[in-house]
Image (cartoon, rainbow, N blue to C red; front, side, top):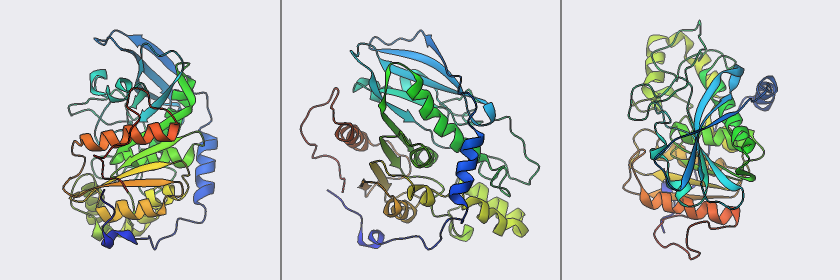
Length: 335
């Protein structure tokens, strides 16, 4: 069992969110209360134990967001569902990529991130039709960065909230057993959904992105933070305004507003989302929480032990163990 190292144990953020943070998000979600219009189309898949649906729903501004819903085929009642958010640049890919949760008796809704996933092993199907008149560098991190109302992640957070509604809308899903999950950007979106939606039962937050972003000079020159650094390099006159916008989207402020049980994951050799930023976010998390610390892991590296810890954590929170044994695990370093 590995707890947080002493250097990370007492970290807290010195920055407070804007005074109108909660009002901003209430107004944002109120404005996004258009019909969800979820569409679930069953598709043929080479799976004998799961049913696959090609999903779309009306996300922020009514834009259509694509997802896969994969449901265990022989469930005798509605099942819990993990809403899976994706890392930066990833798309939903193919259903065969997402069989862990159906294999242990849960549905999974794998949600595209708008505009992403076009040039990798997991392509996406969701365009981003929003333009901006503000300066930006290529990518998404700086799109609309000079105005919280136009910032890219405002739409992405609303999409995440409405993805939870989409999972709830399917009759095979138990609306009382919704879990949000993700790594890096996906971890940030899971935090947003947990903070902004009151029907999330648990959160799996792995190496979350865009947390404790208080000084661009302290950020690593690695993607996707590199985009923010380039923006500051090319537009130094806008740095203060950009940091003000980011304060409405920082994962630390979201963590302070999330109260469902959460399992965090921290990779000590992470050179993208620093251990300090993850630990700070964890300390600010308002709900019951645990953290897995992986001393030799880097950013978003495959980790079967972490997946096992997540399966058992979700089973414990939801009070069931579909498809897994009832005994404790000794493999996962969780504190």
